[in-house]
Length: 530
Image (tube, rainbow, N blue to C red; front, side):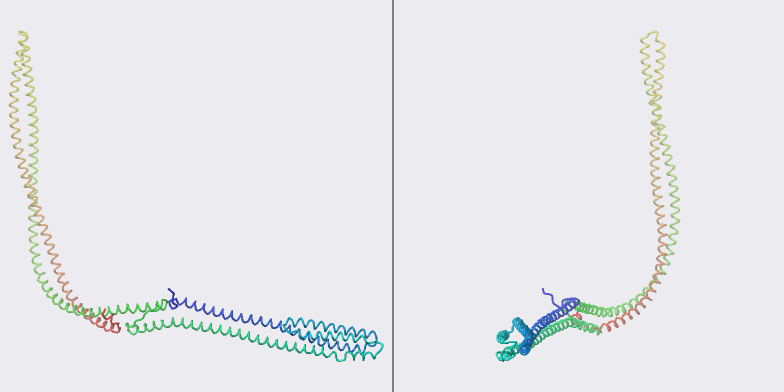
């Protein structure tokens, strides 16, 4: 997409304007330089040409003067060449002048050819001069230095023949003057034409540069001042409270960004002012409701304060009752702890009895073991006695004494076994009695344990009741203080409600003032609807 001129940044446009003015200045300078160069070249060419014409004119005049001197030398030759030395002198001078004139005419012919001038006139002059020279020299053959009369004869022979060369040379000089004058006039015309052309080119380039600069300056100024004017108009409208003025940025340069920013600012102000107007109306309505609610709250707060005073008196009586219950609970807790201590002592005694019965059971067990050992010893002794009796019977008469002893030992073994059985019976009976006593003592200990646990539970319950009563008394006191504080707070709230009512009234007045202030701004219809 081609970038529009008004979308360029101002710095870029200023740079382009400067570049355009610089380019126009360069074009004007180049045009002027070309005109001056052409004029200078023409002037040099004209000077060289006019110098060549001046040289040619001078050559023609030199030839004219030389021819006249030649003619004069001819006359001097005829008049003063009466002796041979004078004749030879003037004849040499005449011949030299003739050669010079011929050389000058030949040089003039070359110069005229270089200048582009017709050489017909100079060729005629050269021809007539050569013919004149021939005739002069031919007539001079009749001259005798010894006879002065021959001079008149010779003069008569060439009388009037110098007029054609003189006329030709004079015409040639006049023609050269005319050609020089014409060339000078032509040079003046060409110089004037060149100067006028250069001037026209310089003026045209200057005018074009000025027009381009003026047009570019106008476009740049217009592209800057018009958006700025629109921005100023929008700012003035906003300053006067008219937010309905709309503008759109038509370019992407700094002025376009300024218009876009101002347009966005105006839109934002419309939204903000519209919102403030709406909110201020709602605030005014809300403050009216708050004021009404504060009045109702003030009345209810007064009623609550009265109810709290009655509650405080009731709580005071309840506090005294709870304090009395807490005192009784503490006394019951002390008695429960005493009963618990007695139960613990009984439980300790029963534990000691159980331990003693356990020791008796242990001793009875050991006695039973000893009795069993004695029974085994009696059995072995009986067996040994039987063996000894058998051996005594085998021995015969020699073993009678040993048989008597074996019989006694056998009798002793039977008695020992019988005593051991009695002891075992007594021990078994004792163990049974101890076991029965141990079981009863265990049952008694279990019951004492249950009693102790019940007493502990009662003690804990009574303690908990006592602590609960204390905590309840403390809580009731805190509730009492809280009720008193609530009473104080309620009274403070009543005062604050009155202050809030006054503040709400003040806020309502401020809201009404804000509404009037916001009404200063004029919003667009869509902003009002929003």
